Image (tube, rainbow over all chains, first blue to last red; front, side, top):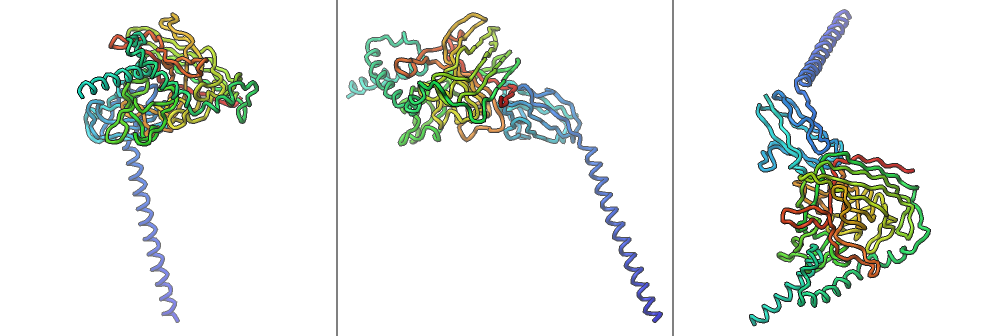
Amino acid sequence: MLLKKLNVVKTLILFLMISVWGFTSINSMVSENYLQAKKKKKKSKVVKVLLKNIAFVPKIIKIKPGTKVEWINKDTAMHTVISGTPKKTTDLFESKNLGLGSTFEYTFKKKGIYRYYCGTHPTQMKAIVIVK
Amino acid sequence: MLNKMFNASIKLFVLSAFIISSFTFVNAQDMKHKGMMMNKKEMMKKIQMLQKKAPAKGYLKAHAMLKNPLGLLGGPISINISQNGGTAYLALPDYRKIDPRIFGTPKMPRAFEGTPGITGLPPMLRGVKNGHYTKMKVKSPFGDKHMTVSNAHLSIKAVDATATDAAVTKDKLQFSASWKDKAGNTYTVKAKKLITRGLEYPTFGGVVTNIILHGFTGIGTPLMPSEYTYFAFWAIGNIYKNGQLVDKMRIVHGMLTEYVRTKGYKLAFDDQVTPTAMHFHLMVPPFKPNMKTMAFDQAPVNTGFKLPNGMTLPFWHVMFEAVQVNAKRK
């Protein structure tokens, strides 16, 4: 009888230990993920460029490597965002056709001077991203 | 044999020259050569035949004398469109590429009836390669070539109240557009009076909202792609250069449509239209209505704008890209 009771207590303790271990490891995993995401969020800064009145606003932006640039079309006209110049595209990025309110984003990882333009209005809309 | 071929090619040249002149607006003075005048009659007949075949003639006849047209379903819509400065895009004469979805194939041509350039495109003006149409053989206001102009202003206050074509209308319009060229000249187009009914296609009392125009519709030239049109008007108006009247009583057509330009500002085919953007088009065509024949006569617009080749641009086709739009049911 006593032996039976002891066995039950042993099983309960074992179960409790496993539960505590499981909970703490899940908890640590979750908090680790949360911290990582928070860190990532802090790291990936977003700089916004407006497509407004047939122009990129601002025309020149200076950012650090790893910065994400988000272009937002505020015109009723259709625009695109294409890397390079109208004479020589660089195939780095090219948005689809952007209607009113549409957005396009690209993360600049390496240092450099990046020119881009609007494919619909190539003579009017040219701009530069400086990454350093 | 050689002589025959020579005569045939001369004949073909003379015939084409007339069509080209009526379409690309070469000065009529150039056509006063005797031989050409003889063929002009022949060509006039052909053009008149095409004009009589304009598909909407019957519909237009039913509405022409209407004195009590019905109103717009749901009530009148008031529209305000403006652009205050910035760029506008000026279309230059160019060879329009031919969209097979609109114009068919040489074996099965479509969209050829009506005044050339207004409602149709005669097959003889279409280039052909490997059994397909390529581009127009002559230049028109509808193509890829363009230039930018500055200080572009647009002011539109309109009401769409009348639904159909009629002799009278409750539609209203105040329209003014202006822009500046690189030499500093300012060009202005002002509308004076609405065209309440059409000659070859309907004008819906002068102002229309929320409809598809051009392309496959037969309403307006098929050289423009089929485009959802949020607002359009047809009016008679005047043309000014630096404040001076340079032409009057011209057809003035404006429309706010979904976006029909593509990469490099090329004029779209139907499958390249962008439905999520819009722009405003102003058109002053090189034609005048002829109330006797109930069709259109060629008449270059005196725009006062000199092209690099010294020729005066014979039409206005201007796109306003940065417009503010407000509309509501009254």
